[in-house]
Image 1 (cartoon, rainbow, N blue to C red):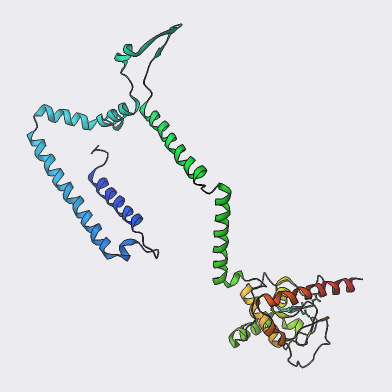
Image 2: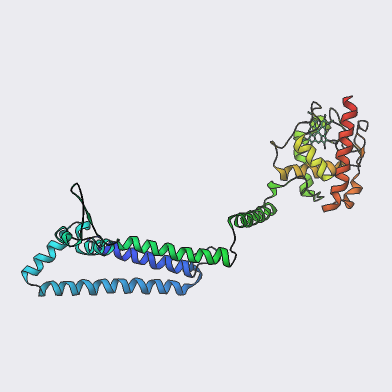
Length: 324
Ligand code: HEC
């Protein structure tokens, strides 16, 4: 045994087992290891290591003394035993014997049955204990299983699955809250924070001004300052238009691959902030949806959903008309 686990393997191994056992039992709550959270654990670990080394020193000293006391024959026998390969070492053999209860060849006559088929004979071996043990384990498992799932109504796989899905959904929601870039049109909120509007303006000037003019007066694209909207006003619709683009073939492409959703939210805020301003050269109003910045106050949360739906309907009507 000693040969296969020398001191330099034994000590670190035992120490590691002890260490992880403590981690597992106490466990740092904040994700920190237990020994950093509770300094007592550090002392405990130190003591354990100290004890381990002390035991090793005492054991090796005792062994040395025992060795001195041995007769040369005993010493030779011990050396021989230690030089055996792992599978033949006495304790492995004893263990195998216990697990299998096999009979030595010379004992086979005791269990030979009188069945003889063309020289093929049968031995009446005991069932191997490892196998019988497993069999009992299945009994215990079955009883626990029966009680848990059929008597005490444990969760079925379907219920487990559903619970996990709900938990996962909660996690996703939690994640979305703190990750602005998972933002959708429904969650976008208008902000009149100057920093947000400045960031929005910068993106607008470099990407949008060529078609909508820097002041939003409109050129290829429609005037963004008036109260007439082709695709709908309000945060949700403007966010959607920027992200998904306008009607096919009109020139307003989807921008969602160019900007992060948090950036689109800023641009949308800036676009809405342009509403009601007076551009130098205003393009004539286009679109039948009337929406002005004043309506922002009525928006927010659920209230936004209703008018937004109307808008989509109106704009699809619009498309039909223009298609005819
Ligand atoms: C290539 C020219 C072009 C560029 C660049 C462009 N747009 Fe447009 N935009 C248009 C056109 C054309 C429309 C009308 C789309 C339609 O009729 O469906 C439009 C429509 C819009 C609308 C909807 C207006 C309404 O009345 O409903 C918004 C909002 C808008 N653009 C914002 C932007 C923003 C923000 C950018 C920059 C990220 C941008 N646009 C870049 C051409 C452009």
